[in-house]
Image 1 (tube, each protein chain N blue to C red):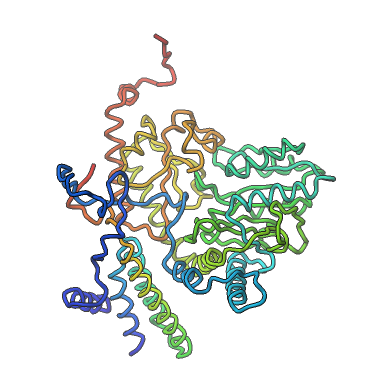
Image 2: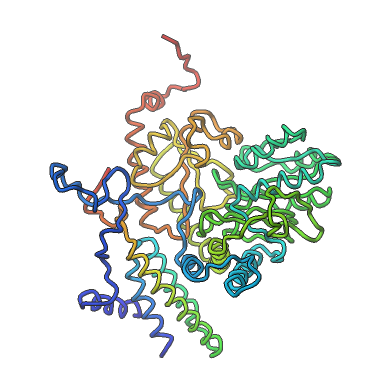
Length: 457
Length: 85
């Protein structure tokens, strides 16, 4: 009844003159995607170029790569970009004081999302910097007595790379393998812990296959063996309930742009009771308790704080919706296409990240065919190289299935229509590509591909 | 009553969000929020909810405006009469 009344009013408003205009006449600011020239710059003599019709933007189904800014977050950030531009470390005037108040408020918002104390939150430039601080900072601080670290083979590139650089400094690192489900074996973890292990780093939710590691159990093991536990929670914060005390987490990395916040900001949680000592990576004026010098970017941290607060309020609602949409996507694809494999454990899985392998279809060609939908095959960090993702290799996926994997991301703003469109196009193109595939023909004829002896010409 | 008027104002405004995904999200979210809270009887709680709704209305008003200033092309699914493979 309310909706009908609203529609009636909207109809009146649209036909009547002023008020917010749905079709914005400010053409000068329109941006075009791809290789189409900006409207204002089209010279009159290229009338030969045919009217291409309206350029339509693809659907966004790549939320693991990044997320759009929630309007509530942008609304919180704008005042600090326009009028309240003071440096939060300026102690002598109102500009500094108001900026500092906003920064502390944001710190409280981030802390309350993960059950921490605000003094335990340090703002950084993103989860990559947080991971670097956690791994290198802890390892180097305790280097005189502890020289060993443990991590997994499916961690994010920045964690693996930090460990590699520590190995060059003389540390020893154990890269735990994962089972076929993508989850680590807890017994292997216990066996790997040595008396000189300083840190265990395991990510909460994997960005490529969406698998959830048993964080609470790992935390229990680490605390009983007196080893610090770091988790890269960039994909998990604000999406699944996390509590650093219940899960016995000592360090946690948080990323702003994965939770509908701004890019270029993140945070690291560093436990104070019992105190985790970290050697600072960035030297300077001693801001952020000396752990991360540099002016704290007030608009960005206000955005991060607002994003965390919105996430806390919306977590249950979003999770329910995303689970439903994810179920819908998987069911509809699997019931119309044979030979589709979902990578990663289906039970311990965050529903918003779906990684499917379509047998007998090349992943890149499917992505190119699905140009109306923004998707990715694996992580954005590794998409430049031609190798299949190391995460899929770590869970034991066959080479050919690893090459044909696509990652679908469902987020807060994904609609049913978008999911249905994606499913429809996906089915259509997979069928088309399989028709063209000689391997598919052979499989239809009943030939076992593994028994074929390929010859060189 | 003020509750209904805020609800209806909010819904009306939502329809002007230029970005399709924000628009559908907003309509659905507010409708669900009002439905969830429709049986609240405690007047203090009602007033808190109405105040929050009024604040949200302000946020939406500003953000819809900004969205229109920086509007760009429509999504594929908003224009299904022109199918692209």
